Length: 255
Ligand code: NAD
Image 1 (tube, rainbow, N blue to C red):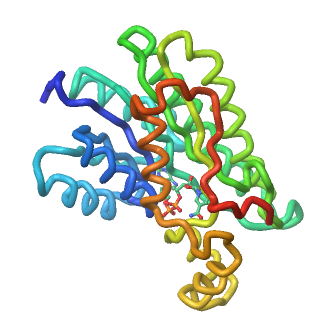
Image 2: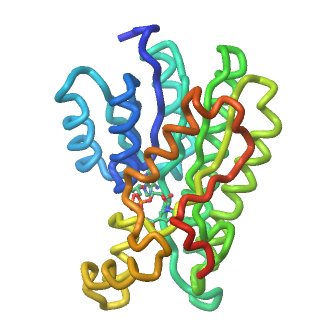
Image 3: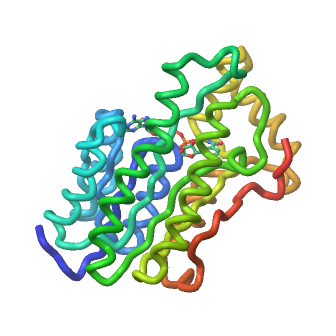
């Protein structure tokens, strides 16, 4: 389905809370989405929804711990549409615990999914974009990658690495016409956030209402708040923004 008129974006974690909102935002702006996620059923539901208004998305289920899968996401976009305008590395896992509660397997899984997969997708994408007119890459870090919260050592360290890695790539490849940035979300009401409350035995609705009071803007973030920031950074409106880590947390930056 080569359609050189239609821009193409690869989005990972596309079936998750933020991922679905990000895909919708790109489709609303005329993009074709190559949507990746490990949850095949939820991914297909997501792309079915996106395709109700036309041929807008392709579901590409798989596990980002596989280098071959990471590279295939990029290669599929290129072979199917002939172009790669944007990449959003959004997938991630949250690993809870102090260092004494973190196993070798926890550490490796966290870094494989949250960081190493981004190394693989970015390397493939940059190699294509630099010879095809540039592009944009947005990697989802976390406010906790800048201001670490308690008892999530592996998660915070992996997200700090995502922010720094994005700023390094942004600097290295701005001259190739590729703008690479990170977005650092604060507390966003998604299944990931709610799973933490359930894990600690709290009712998620009550906990979300309580937590909202601690944000200076008086609410938690919505997935759409992040989708807007990601789309902005990917768009021409952000043409002079590269090598940054944009904090999107409603002014709640210290935990
Ligand atoms: P989510 O759990 O709703 O979505 C994450 C998605 O990633 C899921 O659909 C999951 O299936 C997918 N995924 C996980 N491991 C994978 C793997 N090995 N291969 C392929 N896909 C995999 O979470 P979310 O809240 O939408 O989070 C999106 C991103 O935002 C994550 O990187 C997360 O760390 C980050 N973040 C979230 C918050 C928050 O408050 N929700 C805050 C800061 C940063």
